[in-house]
Amino acid sequence: MLSQWDSFLKNLGEWQGSFTRLSPQGQEIEDTPTIVTLEGRENNQAVHQVVHYLPVDKPARDIVVDYRNTSLNRSILFFENGAFAQGSMQFAPYGSFGGEFGLISEECRLRMVILYDTSSKLERVVLIREKLPNSNIPEKPPLTVESLLGEWQGEGVTIYPDFRTPDTFNSHLTITQLNSDYLEQTLAFGNRKITSKAKIDGSRLLFEDSPLKVQILLLPDGASCNCPLEPKIGHNFVLEIGWMLTPHKRQRIMRNFNDKGNWTSCTLVTETKLN
Image (cartoon, rainbow, N blue to C red):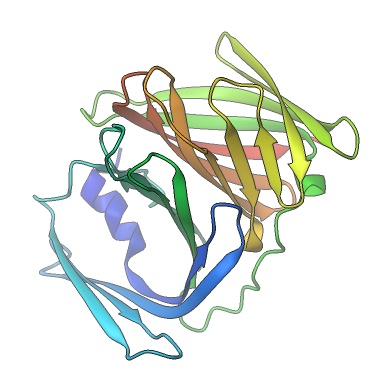
């Protein structure tokens, strides 16, 4: 099993793309071209990161961060393929809260930031699409309801902040469109089975029947953002992003929080469409 540091090194490279700021409803507000460089130094025992922002109407600016193999932040966890999730370790009313997620496929990276304001309401989402130099892989189509419909067989792994042995599991997800306004999904994993219904509102799926109202945003580049509109103490919840890699393969990564608002684990699921 790779160490957290070696998994982090899967992100080395010069990632060219943009930071797209979205409203809580998924509408584009601003798009800023970027170059994010992660350079291994000292025989890859250190990493030098530069985020170079290239806005059209403002001066360019850089944010520089240095990492060492002995000092990764406790709030971040990496999977062996380089995917990661980081962010708040505790949700509490009246405090800032959010997370950043990253998935890697071939020469492309998809990252997303989900942020809540101090009243615990979803404030904004930032979609980050990146490629290595000279990549000729085209951007994936925007995610649609139709592309999600069907049966999905999944393989998942959950890792923990205390680095206990990861849990692995199989899952089965069925998504069916009931009519023009609603779809239903049934997720089975372990000895659990969860059925939920969502209202289709353009490029949003609204799950309004659960104690916490949850939405899924269907986004460009096959991306999705799944999160509660307003987290509350007393309810388990997840922050999740998804990426449709091909019409028959999808990855999802999530940060899991318990009913006390504590961050408990991260989960990566790779799903294959059966029909």
